[in-house]
Image (cartoon, rainbow, N blue to C red; front, side):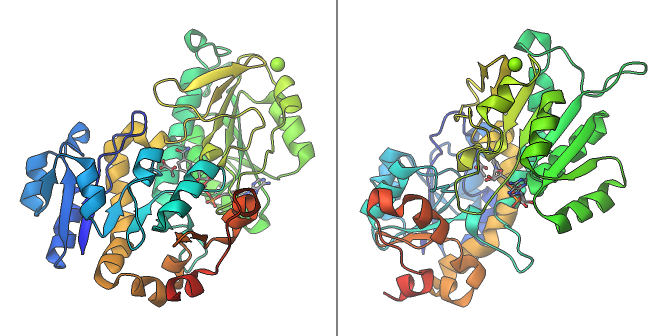
Length: 375
Ligand SMILES: NC(=O)C1=CN([C@@H]2O[C@H](COP(=O)(O)OP(=O)(O)OC[C@H]3O[C@@H](n4cnc5c(N)ncnc54)[C@H](O)[C@@H]3O)[C@@H](O)[C@H]2O)C=CC1
Ligand SMILES: CC(=O)C(=O)O
Ligand SMILES: [Mg+2]
């Protein structure tokens, strides 16, 4: 198969779909890889590194979209990219379709077979291709929060760890999955006072064991959110209902009642965000203020540490990517977990939660993924 790797074009997005090491693996399996000129240059992967790994370097992204059987990316395709995709071609990347009707419509029009990293599953009920970026974003969320709590950034001037004789800052983490756990690790490491909310009791039990009493766990209710958000210095939004638009758990009213200069970091913004006042921001202009509360809603947080993130992402995407390259659509038929990643095929939505959120609005049909690839 011919694998195409265009340079990412989203704001300050320096990750790339394949590392040179991953290219070497595809080539060793008998595939060809074309990589856009300087696609990884910003994070130290030079054109020469890609050539040494067996790739061909191509200047024009249009040529990559035109020639490749499978496009491997990081972020969702931007409108110009969507228009270059076609039926019979596989797109393997993050999509986050539910909050993004424009992309969903454009992908449907293209007819492409689109596999979303974020909905591929594993046998433990996890999301193995989302997990590495959730680990990164969870850890970054506390850095971002601590930074924005500084006076010069407009924050309240609170040091999350406090100092001897002064109480630490309060961190509220809504959603105790991968993002929430990594955020808690960093916040605990800084010495903050940390509470995690989740709807899953088994998950709260695991967190209680993991942190050995160093974090408070609470069942996620409207009452808990109302009460704890009033006292919080930093709230991290880390909920996920796979494939679906995030529920708005922190309302405008809650935010109005928060302390001036406190900070919200909505990691769930890539699924539309879990705070009512959230709107996606970029690394270039990451924050805005509503009711004296700083909002950080960067939808591609791991892009900020693109070198670490690219390597972590490739560790997870490589085995599934190789299966797709080796077997084409049969790879989906053979692996129900990879099949769960199929979100669009030949103009039909093949992921239920995306169809529930957008099918009616866009007038697009649902077809179950197995029937879709056999059609
Ligand atoms: N902005 C960015 O750059 C990035 C965003 N993300 C996003 O972060 C979000 C979280 O991802 P993960 O931690 O990997 O998901 P996860 O599935 O590991 O964890 C989500 C947790 O939310 C909990 N939850 C669901 N409804 C809840 C409610 N009403 N109250 C409290 N908890 C609730 C679930 O029980 C689960 O434990 C996703 O939307 C993901 O796409 C991930 C990486 C980067
Ligand atoms: C998961 C995601 O949206 C990201 O890594 O940018
Ligand atoms: Mg206020």
